[in-house]
Image (tube, rainbow, N blue to C red; front, side, top):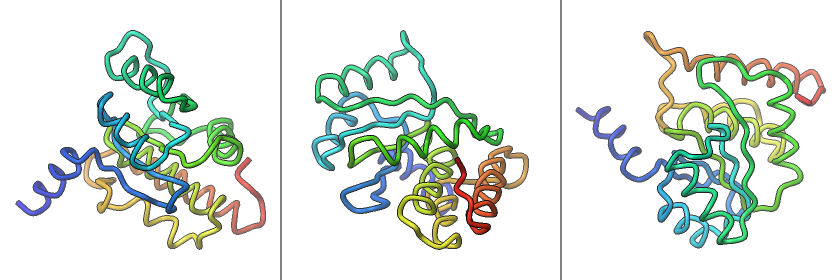
Length: 173
């Protein structure tokens, strides 16, 4: 019951979390009004959508309309929670983290797996947090559940590869 309650609470709240105060936030897919509220509450200047470009869908059209209305940069980076992202995708994320206006909000559908990977990457390579601390972004606290039949362990594997390269002195790019 406790686990189900936690998952429901994450869903209801939009799974929004401040990762680096005033700089980096993560969430699930928010409604248009919730996106607008988050932009205003946290001063968001960039939204990084990890679901990819989907014009003509309600969620995407609402998000891009709110971003345009509020003068927020909107960046689409297509990722699957079930497959390791290719190096080009990791490089694109790092470029956005480095160059896009901050504060930024990164999101996927549930705010757990792809957002967890992106947040761990930000923590490791931008905020310069230790690997162990950065990896906490891929935890059940945020709804990440890579066990049993889930294929979202691909995000853990991808982060481990990035962390290994990072620890050897090479950036992921």
